[in-house]
Structures are given as structure tokens and as C-alpha cells.
Length: 104
Image (cartoon, rainbow, N blue to C red; front, side, top):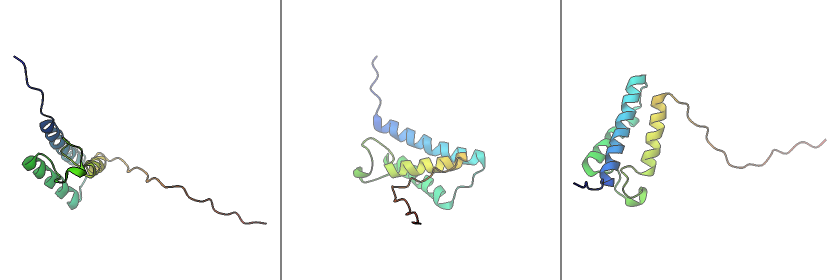
């Protein structure tokens, strides 16, 4: 008996829910206090993924077949790094002029 190919939307939904639960478990295990905004973000994203299968309404904000938009995914990674106790990465700076040296 042949099986049907897996549904990519269902896979994306499961992956997003697992990632959200993983971050919450990691924060609880390490004892890191998430801010009120971060806790509300995780809860609202989880509710929207459970209800609609994805956490964003505008298809321009994320790849087709994905459950989280690009910005939601980035914020989830930042919260995950905070829960693990990792230091935030240094912000990149653009090119700038060298300071002029005083002429003698």
C-alpha cells in the first residue's frame, strides 16, 4: 500500500509549534525570565498557528508553505538565544571615513 506524500503545510505547522514549545521549555529549564512582550509574542504566534496554520496573513511577508514570516522567525531565534543564555551578536557597522590626522 502506497502512502501519500507528506503535506508541506502540515509539516511547517508542526515545525513551528515544536520550535515555539522548545523555546519555552529552554527558558523554563535555564530559569531565564522572558519579558512580558516575549511571552505574549510566543503565545499569540502559537494561537495563530493552531487556528490558521500560519502566523501571518500577508503572503508577501513569508515564503509559501511556511508557518512563520521571516521577521517572526528572526525574533524566535533571538528569544531562543536569550533562553539559552547566549550573548547577542555584535551589530555590523557600515563603512566609515578614517579620522583625519593632525598635520604637524
